[in-house]
Amino acid sequence: MRADRRPPWACRTTAPGLAEHLRSVLWGPAEFVGVPRRLLAEGLLTGSAAAAATVGAGFGGMWGGPRVLGTGEAGLVVVAVSVLYLAVRRAGRLLVGIVAVLGVCLAFLSPDVAAGVALRQRGVVEPARVASVRAGPGHGLVVCSVTGVDAVPTGARVWRGCGESTAPGDTLPVVYDPRGLAPARGVAAPGELLQAELRLAGLTVVFVAGCAIAVVRSFELTSRPSMA
Image (cartoon, rainbow, N blue to C red; front, top):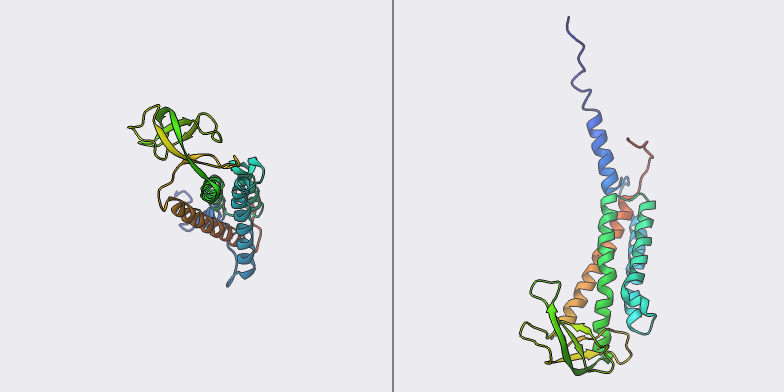
């Protein structure tokens, strides 16, 4: 006697449903028809507000605001709120992760660029004596601890102008902030700050776009039972 067999189409009904569920979880349901203008506007507004607050915190810390703004921690708080908002909207988890990574990069890049802009506007260049030289975190990067300038704290570390041939007792040109808000650094090469500003602008655009896509794709017409 032949044993009962499942029809060939029985196992095919669950696979598309599982694939659809995974796609919805990772990328968002995106159940909209036509051009989702309202969702797009909401996503762009969300991303722009988060980016403005994150970048603004970094620049505010270098231009007279509380010092804590210049550390990037305030930007991280803004990014965390944005990620939480996307999670509440049930945006795709992969998109939420991408936005989180972009936001963290934006939060730490903003104070660095803001410090460069502040030093360009009001920085003072003076020679400083090299106290010690050691290898930096990057491949081939050398970091010098300097002293000898009143406005620069003893042991301040700079890498611009510091090379393998640099030895303790040498002097390096250091640009420092008389107001003490922006950290001292070596004199930047021509065009270096412009490149950093362009990177920040590009990262900001990508972050805003990521938020907008996450919000647009989070729209769901029907609620489905969760698949365990």
